[in-house]
Length: 370
Length: 234
Image (tube, rainbow over all chains, first blue to last red; front, side, top):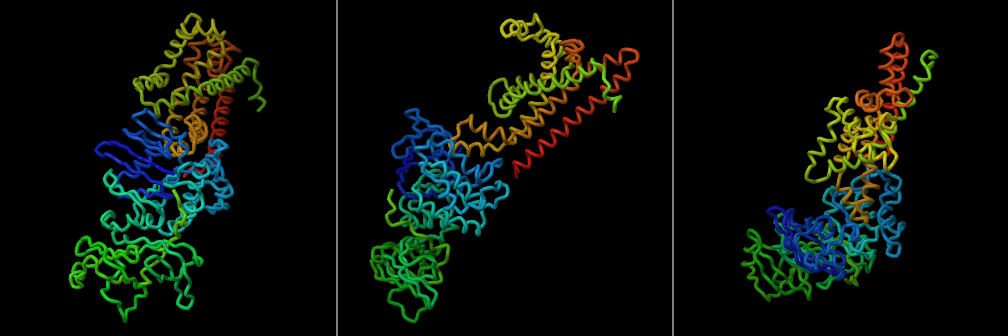
């Protein structure tokens, strides 16, 4: 699947000028509120008509103002999960789930009722009315409803933004399963670094109505300057790893990454399972020689590949560890004391306890093709 | 009780006719009522204010004026009346159908108001969600909007029915007061109060009229509550 967008849209004083292509399993539209991500997703869905421009999926044109093409919403077969679920209050959960199937030609119906119900764990809710569901359950039903219309593309507009942390944690695994077990490509709107780093294969960063950057998640998450100031602490390297073994005695799991072995608190994943690891830049220390007498368990040798000024007293040091980059955020004073410069051999030091459930997630399947 | 139900044939006819006229007026008003309510709630067109005023006219004009205007328009020689009689064989003047028309027109603003309010209360974002699932506008209306405005439809219908049961001025002006054809309950009561010894009959019909209105109101309440429970809207 390739989504190509080239759109100009005015809304009062706000101008959206977005141009990007994405072929990812899950493309995140990332940016602060007011950056135009919701406008963009509504344009793709066809809920608002564009000023001018073109949007196509796999060459199938949805909008082309120059050619006067505008495929109406109900013909696009693009599923949408809204922030506020928007379930039909007068139908049961089962009625909501079945709604979209009606309108899908039987030859194009790929989503199976029992599979989707099982995937989202909503079998016990089928007879209930939407008013009787919790926020998290509503959102799962809304995902199922969109999926059962067998869409060509699934749009998710900040589906977790209105939920508390516990509910978010409840739904995230379902979105991961959705990404890994169904074929439907997903475009996911979010302003949360943690969500994007966990879920996305590709990221499009929007800022004030323009595309500030786009590319694979690992590359974007290293660009701390692209992240909103209050979430910059969440930024860092995103590493694709595999579970090498579990250390029962100490309650740890050893992950194999290109950068080397990394010990994290015990994970539930099986040996061999892929795990996506976010190494927050603020959690990484830099040593100029192999440290001894240090409690931190993860010490990765590497070479400084970039030094960028950070916010306030900080600098960002990119360390190339065997071809995989780990980002460290340290003070300018430390950099000068250690005389760090490009090309220096250093060691990235990461405490095991700095990893938690927010920074370890199910990895994307290795053969995640477009 | 026997005394109450011991009606003369003319009185019975008035009761039956009133119910028939009110029911037909209510049912016939529903489709145009929904359409106009939709236009007023959601339409953006030139002349919306004019349409709104037109719909509300029967509410503010003296009923006799409405009846007379109906006579001018839908009477035998009126433009609409002559056309309908000639091409469709539909005659209003001095027929029960005319009484139904008069009652429908008089109740129309009440019905449109109730439906319009319920349409305005519908969350359009839910309709948009139905659109993303593949439903075109007609399907969205039939499967989402219509069920969601059901309480408004019931309220509007009952208002229209109640108005028709009590309608007097426009009906008597338009289709006169012919026993067994256009003499509805109010007309019959009025006639009985004008003849010596008619008091007893007038009282009987008055009580029956009150009973019918109350039954209609209670029925609508029960229906609305059942619909409300089924929908369980937050």
